[in-house]
Image (cartoon, one colour):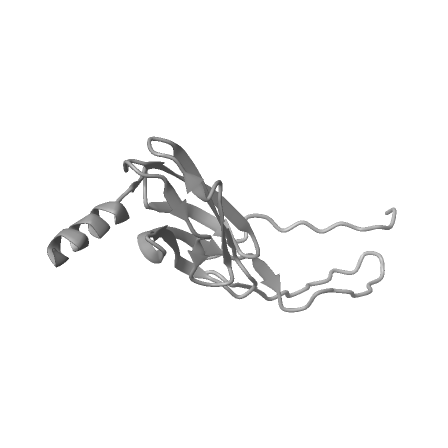
Length: 165
């Protein structure tokens, strides 16, 4: 009898079929956002009662299209990732999907998102100001740093004057 109850509960827990359980956003800019909709179908014989999805951290949000999914009907879970300042490199975040079966919360799956967060060039000083007389040659050194692990190459340096010559 106990084995029969376990098999019934186990079979009911496997009622959602996701088109995919993982998504890679590729490159996401630092302080940027990316979103994706995970699609699923209730392949069970009974109505699926879903609980709000639970993201693993505060930088990820998840929204369920509907909490009640009849048999053979589909739904979506929208997942949005927000990259905060200081976040760099490869990230992997999870969203736990839960459904209620016989009054108990059951794991219906874990959605995974991935991305590579890249930053921007940052001048060591926010403003460069200097004065010169007409005809004088001036050399200005400027330090740039990157908050990425990519090699930086200056392709072109341009200067201009706000004065008529």
